[in-house]
Image (cartoon, rainbow, N blue to C red; front, side):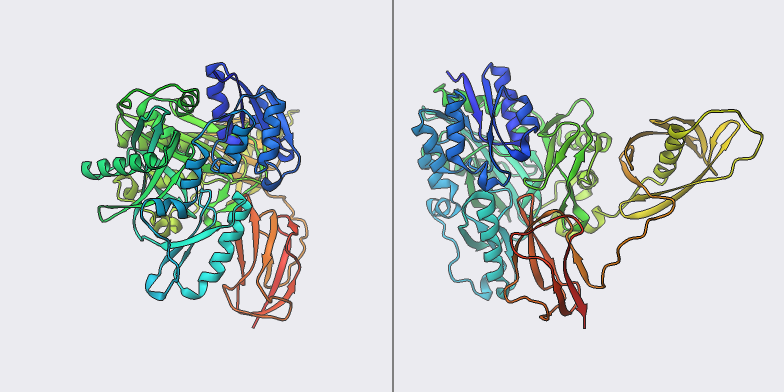
Length: 613
């Protein structure tokens, strides 16, 4: 029996594993980088061990340090979570060689399936070798890991070399393995996967299907179970292929077999030899705890002959600290508050007041809804996200709500090109027109000083706010009856709640303030000064860092004086485990290049200047 377990991971998945261990009475140990010194997973574990440094390569990818930590803390088992070393066969062997229980498949199964190239060969498939125009479009893909990292779509042959280089660099940073391969890119397919669970006694459960077609940068955003609209014959075929893949490598534990479904046919993608981010939708539909089952399988417990029966439908949305309208740029800062309504599940690696840094994935949380039907589950999740309290950096919350309510999704007609088609419409700013007024009235109440009343008409007060980069100005006055605004009846106003009546309808506005940042229901506002301070003027054509990060490389041969074309890649930033390309805004001459590879930059740092022709 496992008595003490070390979680070789961080964030949401670490907290999720810790939760099950507490329920089972298992003592827990967390490892943490210096950047995660006070992270939620370290606060929730019974004991912690420091991994010196911040970068994944120095911390969560150091299997030797993690095994040493497990032994020092008296752990008798290690759970890898997902990402990092979860699909690293050498790490699994090191855990077993140290006399510890490995919560995962045998190292040999990881070796066979964790490399997508070897997995394809095992399933009778081969990657593309010599790519020609006739093969386009193709997908460059990291052989190790997952989560959309190390992936590039190539539609023009001359872009292939740059895509290979970028994918290798990103994969090496995220997984410690820079191997990549090329395969045909299936346009307009659905991403469908099968959850499997296998024990050491020969039983393999296929636990239904999941649809993960809504993706950005090849990383899943919304997932659901079961995959809607699949013919019964295709579902049975997917189950059979998944079980075949598991038996081919004597699989043990939880895993996922992924497919692209197009024109009624299933195209094998890969097998993930670990727990998936989207596992909660399967748990909800089958009424199980996959982490608990992983632990029992590792202890030698036999599964029942048949899996439990499914019930209802579940949908999961991933909340990211990012700006979808600006090339999904990751965001950093303080997460002041995150709560969701009762009736949905929240899995998160952050607590109120935690800092979202630059070193790791920008996912804040997962929100999961379960209901008897797909329509009810989708509506329930959209409503929960819409009413969630989310105070902090910009997120993809509005995009998720609009995606869930989009007719293409509600009618289950979506595929992996959903955001290619609809992103512009889904990210159009639509702030509540009364949010600035509510913020101003709450602010006026919070700052009011009560004294002798004077029979002198009050002059209109003016407040200015920035919402999604746009300026909004509001006017209000102090009267004998209280605060007033043109065309709006102020029913109530205090520092936290404002009630306005517009055209006979009363609306409530919950207001929260953190310095100059305010949140009115779901609208984020920043108070602008009455008299703006002088700002430093940047030269025309200046390129500044859209996020804090590291300059990983500069385009070959680029130097001041080089001629550049509009859209030409100039340099690449790495932030939150993803690479972000900085391109020339216009055709012209590179007048300045102010950074070098390896240099750390902050938001707004000058990177380069391109003078237009």
